[in-house]
Image (cartoon, rainbow, N blue to C red; front, side, top):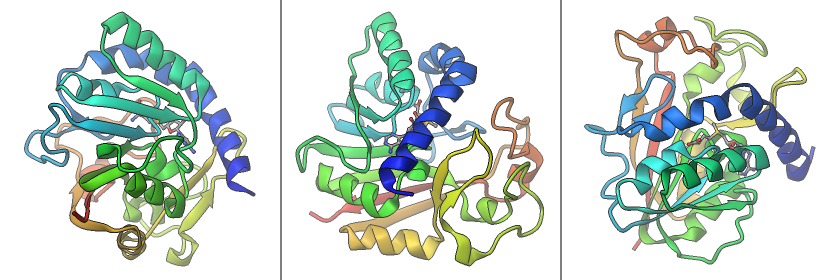
Amino acid sequence: MSHAEDALKNRQVWTKANAEYTDRRARDAWADEEIEWGMYSGPEAGLDALGALEGKDVIELGCGTAYFGAWLAKRGARVVGIDITPAQLETARRLQEETGLNLEFIEASAEDVPLSDASFDLAISEYGASIWCDPELWIAEASRLLRPGGRLVFLCNSTLSVLCSPDEGKVEERLMRSQADLGRIEWPGENEGVNYHLTHGEWIRVLRANGLAVEALHERLAPDDAEDHGYYDFMPADWARRWVAEEVWVATKAL
Ligand SMILES: C[S@@+](CC[C@H](N)C(=O)[O-])C[C@H]1O[C@@H](n2cnc3c(N)ncnc32)[C@H](O)[C@@H]1O
């Protein structure tokens, strides 16, 4: 499959997810006063992955309904969100009007962003390009879009959780796939899309190849009181309390 075909398939997945879940959840998510990471809402406070936000130019690659971008805009960042799914952007635009927050949205692929080089201080992806796009393409775009000294921060499923994921159903407590099969993963089933999941070594290689130095890899465990997620039910809270389910990567572009 070509990248364009994968993007088309992933847009169908997200159009359906928007109708089933993300549109319904978006208003509450925009209203949240905290910045939180991932399925089990780990607070940014204490992690400090994003750094100072006031006055920063931020691009979110795969912005979805843009609750994450909204949290950054509330802290004084100028946020541009890129997404390929019109339904997701419609929700984002509606909430922008409702809240009066000032974000900009562009329908485009994070693998080929129609914006100038070196225009942002911070590039982020919260389960957007970070799992739905080819890292060889979107990391190159993130690096191109960042100013020297700029920061890239992204959240993705942990490598371990993907290795323990069967093709269908919940994450298991044993290895379910070969490390050699990581990279592009096309999940079977009509409602599933195409993801990219790398080993840590491959992430470091692709980041470094694009002039980005790794500053931190935050390995997230779910908190003790975490409950199973109502929609993303492939990852039981009990698993995520014991093993790292999600990773926040932080990298900077050389000055
Ligand atoms: C989990 S959502 C992101 C949630 C987002 N952080 C938010 O605050 O709402 C993943 C998004 O990635 C988008 N996406 C998938 N492939 C993409 C691509 N090639 N370029 C840009 N966005 C893409 C989907 O359309 C979907 O809206």
